[in-house]
Image 1 (cartoon, one colour):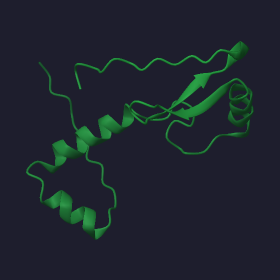
Image 2 (tube, rainbow, N blue to C red):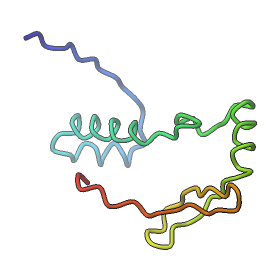
Image 3 (spheres, helix red, strand yellow):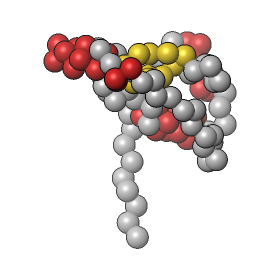
Image 4 (spheres, rainbow, N blue to C red):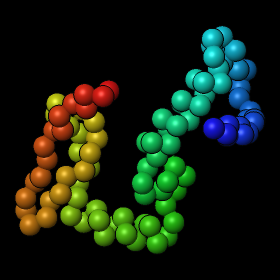
Length: 99
């Protein structure tokens, strides 16, 4: 079995965050987990940039014609509902047993 070579990546943080990270028992593991978790939740449209290209904006405007952003009455999460042909489609998902 061969070990995968790990790389070191550095980044700047403000003093408050640096202090909090230094207090962690295993900062490297915490940071790896946090980054992997964040990558699982990246916006599929902007892919984490926070900015839409002009072409993405065109697609967005077309999508938004039949979809509405609303707050869930049960969990208060923001989500889209389809308003195609006058129908409103929304069901609250069952809780994920792995979470």
